Length: 220
Image (cartoon, rainbow, N blue to C red):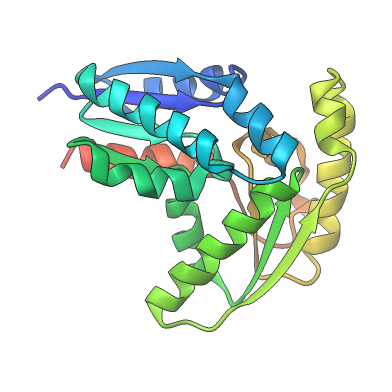
């Protein structure tokens, strides 16, 4: 049976990333996108997701539900707690983009590295990994890093500089971690640009794991 799936983004740059994955993994289902850049602007400005911003996200989730969505995936990791809070408001299944990635990391190793380009994303991602590890009854060690300058570079249009900074951080962290998580979906492209010899530890990004998990639910 065809399902309706809403993807809620805080940046239009994520639409082609998730369209490619949806075309591959969600064939036969109807996917539509909703974008509100002001959500991410608020998070960056406050250094966290303030209550008013979480309320606006909840409004988008409810609008997607009213539009007929059976499943709703919010693609911004910084809004994780707001995503969880919105679940009780709708009949649709509401998904965090980073949960499947966090579960896979917990299953993969004890020393889990987390790399972000925004402090506002690092904290909720680290908290999620801790909670998923606790739920699995597993002790872990978190290694975290914010890659300074990378977000400013990509926002200014210097994608090559962003990728260079993130790539260097990945190579360094890989020497001490069993598995590395990229806290933001926008960082996923860096993994494909790294030569195999520069990947000393498995590197997980949220877009593919999230859509793979979504596909398993949609097609169940």
